[in-house]
Length: 50
Image 1 (cartoon, rainbow, N blue to C red):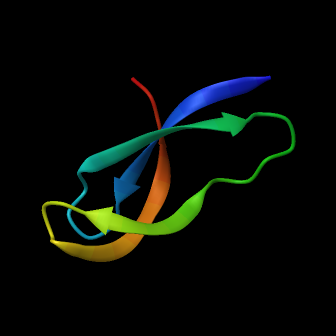
Image 2: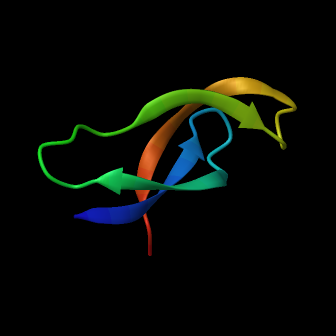
Image 3: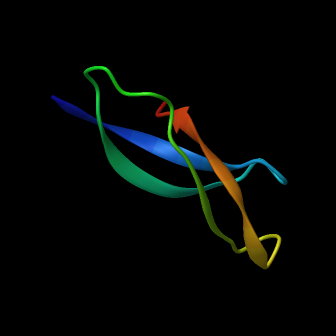
């Protein structure tokens, strides 16, 4: 089973990316992605969709 999650920038808090995630036995996603607001690569953490 999969669900959609948002990747939120840890520096500015904006939600920049939406991706699918496996729900069974999965940890929270964290990856380095490009933030348009900061204009650089920053760590992005998983944020549930509203």
